[in-house]
Length: 338
Image (tube, rainbow, N blue to C red; front, side, top):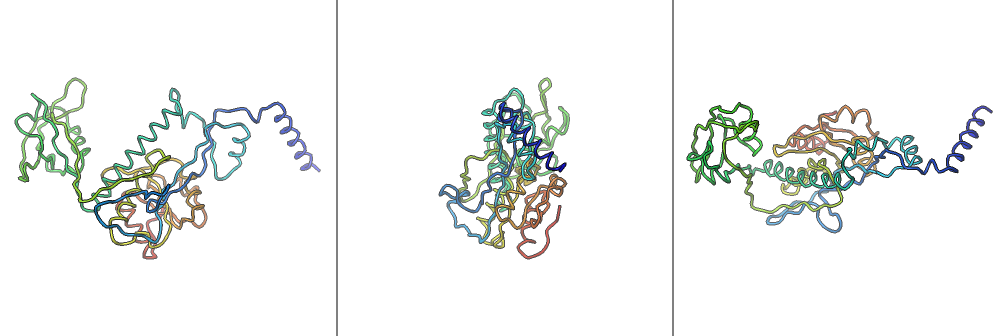
């Protein structure tokens, strides 16, 4: 009788709230749920997601699926209650997704920029893995700057203090790691001939140390790459894009015929970074039939708390580790677990 009475009371309360429109009133929260997943080896809107021209590509029997989070920004109280009850959704304050002072359009534009940047880094990391190194090339030399008369336009900078410059960020980081006025041994090649020179860094005011050159990053390779995927934002697809590129260019099938999902940012050096929405992405992967999920190392603790039954998780901190995990899965072994 007591349970029945509580049910009747709750029903009456909900009816009363509905009658005055409270449940239909907007509230300052956002509902996060499993978003769509996309096979980076497949097609979307009748186009290949990863397009390679100028060389033959391989075909895989399995899938490499990137995962996303669906965002419901205009939330009514009834939707929030449903989200709080659901094990697949999360209800978070509006300002966590749309910071104060930024419109939804501005946030979406930033997410689109992050998505484009993730594609560029995925291409760079994948091409390095495929044996096409980055060249950090001098684009301009500042008049009166530390490098004037030493470096020339077209020089390829290869090292700083005998440490390799693998990508443009490596050069910037090495220069800024020492105070202005430091002597730096800069290795470079000019017209294919290696050389080195000592350059003293300088800084104007509170600016970071510089050596007075503008650089650009080149990565010569004998084919063209294009990632064609719309309606997705943010940087978290980087890892799965990089794996998709490697899979298409190499002859072996990295998937072993399995559906493998994952997430994670990636930088030019192939370092995999953490992302948000792991609980929802795990649900999306499970719904898509994934047999394994690649988790950024820094997201492992959260992933373990929100593990999905029947969906093993592999811990990855770099592109190399992700490829090693795929090797283990393909061979029927066990990759490094979260």
